[in-house]
Image (cartoon, rainbow, N blue to C red):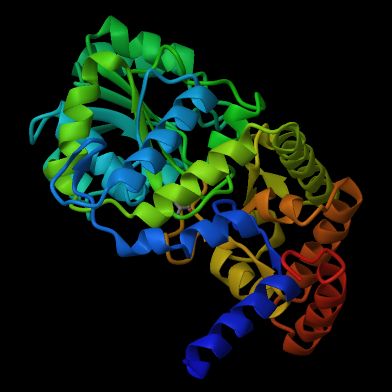
Length: 405
Ligand code: DSN
């Protein structure tokens, strides 16, 4: 009944099929996940928790939410799971609201070094409502110096120490972070939104069981619907639940929660484990391909699904590269690099990730090809005719790996 929107959906599907999506936080959800997201669960209100709802008619929603919770707990090895958070930013807000008082001190990594907006950016609720102290990456290795974090924690006595990042290509030692927090009587929190698919597949060390509270979105490497969840130790479960509802949210998005349950089941399969392993192998292959073409990688490479490229040696800025590569059909995002001397809207770096291309079935040889597309495009970043030529090559290449068609 709405050809205008139908056409937009078709155009977006075509765009996704014909371009190479390298945004590290994006993925392609399965048709089963899309189907659950578009299901009749969208019609139902269900403020409260299972068997304790404020509206009638929730017997099926209760069963569905219980199933999602049980699957989440089993998948991650968590004591408690709340699957109601709408997305990552509200979920982080809910954790802070549950465990802290306004103005309390949180120790986290700055957005400019790979953290997240909600990890204390001054323009965000987090930076306005709490006192954030940031740890920094080591200038040489561009990785976390855990001894320095411990020193800062001892000095600042934060109430919460936050790890888990959006632009950090290396493994995070969650056990060490939890230990540092425990030593100063702080809560340990891990935001594993980017890596949760790798964690459940054993490709990244798990923050469980040491970490007090773990937040993840469900749509990145985990490949579920847009949404989030909070998992925690049983001793703080009531505080977390109260902060989600009625603290911050009203009715849960039941259609998303049904789709989360589907994604959790998918993530328990051997196919998903193989998928997560391939994500990391692809990221390493892409990193190698780019290094061979003279690109500098922050920290020298990657252990995860993402890489951060320092474009300085190529004499191209992040913004120039983002716009030029987009013209060539290669979708990525400009990003600050550690100790960047440039500004966020035109930084020195580019963030690339392999979850999406891996879902399409691409492997190491395809990563070499993508490195070549990127290299040639960056060499001709101001030459629209050349970039249009690459775009045609990219289309031919990408459509050999169909997503939904
Ligand atoms: N916007 C997400 C990312 O790209 O990392 C985080 O919320």
